Length: 272
Ligand code: KIV
Image (tube, rainbow, N blue to C red):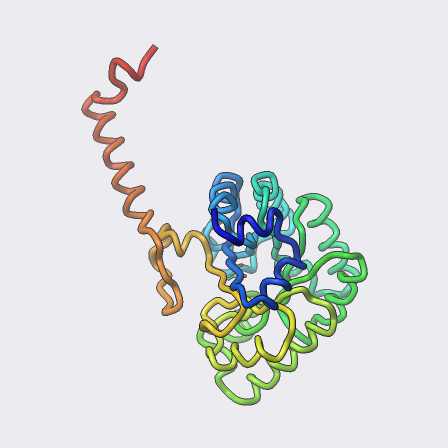
């Protein structure tokens, strides 16, 4: 058991703030189902994100836009049932908060009430500040998300590095400060230059968790299916694969098929 695991029996939004103050990096992974959430919670992950990347990796959509609020609640409630220790953050899906702040609040309330998640995450800065503030008034912790914001893919047209230009970098830093002042407990920074990400992390007191944002931030997040090597087509520079599960599963399935075809399975001991 790691020192962190012992120190935080249950991870809360306050624990993450403490980790930043103590210079301890925060670990975060996505999960969308009970079985994998149970395994990664047992492995000592600090934060589990029920990401709208479920739209890609679970449902096979090209973007994160199609996933619905009901589907996110389904995934989140499965994860929550599995988790003993990690803080569970649930992505608010596209269309559930951009309309107006009242709609944003009622979507966030549905997520908290129906899934049992511990907090929500929204993409964007100044444009959605009113929604963030309204959700916070209900006592719902909010994680921000800046940089590459996949729900806006049709506005930007590509998934390339964000905030390379000075103007965009300045807006990002300003948005990060606005989110902190509004009361967000943490911020995800996706696919931005490492130097800028470090500057943001040093400029605000809330934890900054990066994906493709270098090592100068307060924590790291990856999509579980990518880091386990279950997905194969997605190969950005920032992705470190810790397993090659796709190949392992393929060979297990091939062995099973062969055993069935050759009547090797089940054997004497595997029957009643
Ligand atoms: O939906 C997701 O998986 C995310 C992470 C990439 C941060 O938002």
